Image 1 (cartoon, rainbow, N blue to C red):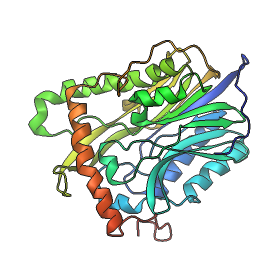
Image 2: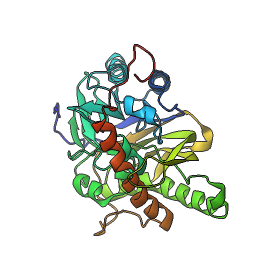
Image 3: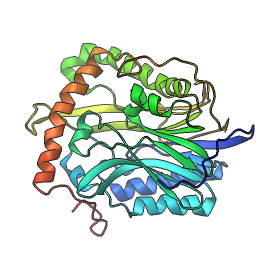
Image 4: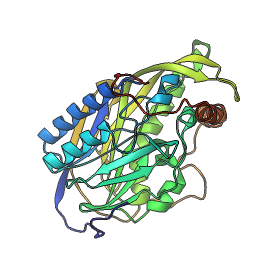
Length: 337
């Protein structure tokens, strides 16, 4: 990472920030880049100086083997778009996509400063089916910029103590994004779907504020909305799937340093943005850190799915890499090669 300024933000000035909520498409990288670009323009028009776009803004993630060809090289049109928007408008923008480097794929959060400086954070642990498409990184997610110290955290990094431990008291702003889905939507589980969905919604809504309060910094969270359909891996060591139809949970939020929600967009509101003025800078964390893996106490279904889907998806990535299926997106053909 390139540091341009290591100073802590400690003034009382308010900064206009925005969080983007997308309704993207699976494996349609050009469409998703354009969709994100238009929402960034909307945020700029409302005066935002810092803009968060979601995790996986170049493609939704579900088990779909087209995604083996949806990663991008380090120099790519998605990053070009972010850099152009940042430098032309004097803003800072962050979001994540699948990036291939040295033969492996990472879920890379890129943060672009107004002068075009690019910083990267690779998500530490893939979540469930994501293990089929990328491997984890090992950086701390702490980025020093001309606008202060930024902590980057992606989706379920936001619910793990190890994220809070490495960023607590160290950042002036948290830039986060997610691709958070709900229950698989199978009819056989009909009696469990409503309570599972409601519980998942409560967890998603509380997560940005709880992380902000635990670390001690304001937070911008960008999410996805809409229905997601695709495959669901069933048996570890195979690529057997059943269909899944799930809700992407949105909860695009702007949160202050105490963890209170200032602005929020529910998934039912679809694509769009939220804007608010916040005060950048570290504050005293409001919550002690527990000595456990997860920040919240996950219910039975998320815990079971975590272990089952991790076991199903990790061998698939190894198979895809071994058989030469991992490659970058071919923009010339406007579809994965």
